[in-house]
Length: 272
Image: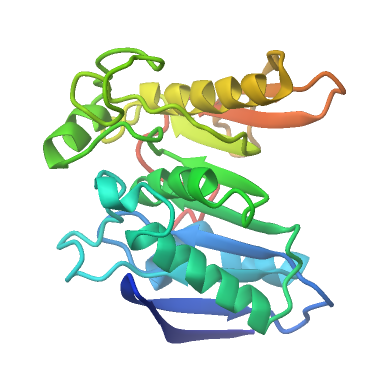
C-alpha cells in the first residue's frame, strides 16, 4: 500500500499528516484516525501500533495527523488548552477538517469513521468524540484523560497524576483547577485501554473516561448501562480485566480494558 505525507490547512492553521491506503480497498471503506502521543511522529505511531498491517488485512484507510513542534515543543496535542477543547476551534477543527477531506477524497463510509489515540492523542480523541459526534462512529482511548480535566500545563500535570478536584456536576467552571472533570454532552461509543502500572497517566484517568461516557449514555437513554466484567489472559501472558457496558437491548456501548502490570504504552502493538 501507499503511505504518503501531505498537509491540510484551514482557518485554525496547518498540519502535516500521513495516510495509509492498503493495496486492496473495497468500495466505501472504513477510515481510522490515529492520534500519536507526545514526542511521536506518524511513522513512530504506525510502527508501534502495527495499524497499517491491520489495515492491509481488513481493508481500511488509516490517517495519522502529526503535531507540529511550533504548536507544542513536545509534539503533544494540546488537549489541555481551552481553545482546543471546543468545536470549530483550534486542533479539533484542524483534525476534523482533515478527516472530512480524506473521507470525501477516498469515498469512505460516513458510518464507519473512527478516532483513536494514545496518551495526549487519546485525550484529543475524547475531545473529538465530544465536539464532532456526527463525524465519528466511535472513539478508542488508550492511556488517555477525560474531557475537560485541565485548562493549562499545571492542571494537565495534576490530572495526569490522578488529580480530580470536585466531581462532575459541580456548578464551578469546567476545566478549572477546583472542578477539572468535564461533563460529556453527547454519548459516543467508546473503548478504553489503560495499564494499571501507568505512572505517566494514572489509571484513574481511564476510570474517569468510562464514567463520563457512561453518564452521557445514561442521560441520553434515560437509564444506566449494565456493566458486565470478565477476567482473562492474553496469548502473550498479560492479564486483563474487561468490562462491557451494554444498553437495554444488550448492545455494547462502552468497553473498558484494564491491562494488569502494563505501563504507559500501546497494548498489543509491535514487541520491538
